[in-house]
Length: 444
Picture 1 (spheres, rainbow, N blue to C red):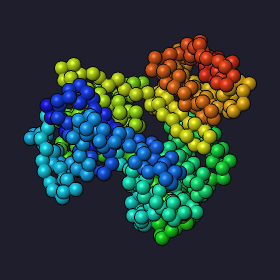
Picture 2: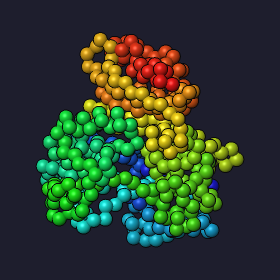
Picture 3: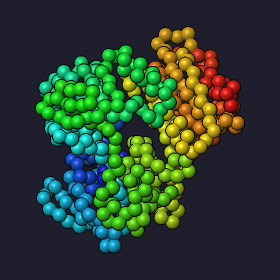
Picture 4: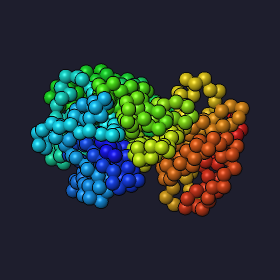
């Protein structure tokens, strides 16, 4: 059995590893067009801070481990340029040897990830403009920061990535200026969560402009409807698009958000072709349908499952989906979410209630902070539909408790009865989750 995998980061390497784990004799070829093996992309903003820590520290595995330890034929700088589903062949360009060849497959895993949404404006092809998607982007930003020491950076877009970048640059004494096209940041979050993030932006004195259109760049000047800004670095992070051009050109069917359409076994409409990761749809349990939420854990899970289903074709396993759980850091705040958000609930016509509470994170013990918890629940039944948090100290792990509650379809009545641990260094006697659940019980 021969499997060719296009894309060698999270989904692709997970698929390859799972196939080899199940069948050591299976032939597995990974085509990775960059010069880097699989890496932890979420760590890229934080690597900027450490001048002497190479970006290669973000590699998930060394090339030697992948090739010799796991027995995977992992080919760097080999770019797939065409798929022929009838012949079951991939046309490949080897950029090292400057040659083109064809690789036949029994099974194919399409794991090409996503690409940054472009900003096709005058001047945005300048070397000082970075999209911060790959390790090469990180290398370029890092060289620019440490070699040229820009005083100011313009961050176009106010999503997870640029908020993390703003945090890092601020702590490197580089003044971030954030411009956002939408009227508000973080549209998937409740207003009560966004308010706390905006308070932190104001507290740090970060210049922020919402409802702004960028018009172009001339030299070091970025022109916008909010005025002109001079900066030695521009980071554009205005969203991503699934990288599906190669698949679509082969007759592949696309689905949610233009991602590769997959069934619950991660099979596509092309025979013998599976898809996984940031290029593919993701099944959302509460919605009961596929959507698109590209995150590292999802890519790894889907890649592993695609590999498992190739290795065990007579006993394939379904991908049971995601609950839209995510978290990120912004200075001393953790911002986290799980389950459905208000926009989705309104679109579904759900009769839901919402509460929010502010609580300390610890008992009578130094070093704690405060946090805000938002719970969304079904009116009448109290079914927990979603939860969001923002605050200092232990927030993400409390959010994980809510993620389990959403997965198990618990009600706020059941959430209020959970036997959560108490000790002053870790929690007040009434944990913030229990306080929030009891408030929700009153509002059901």
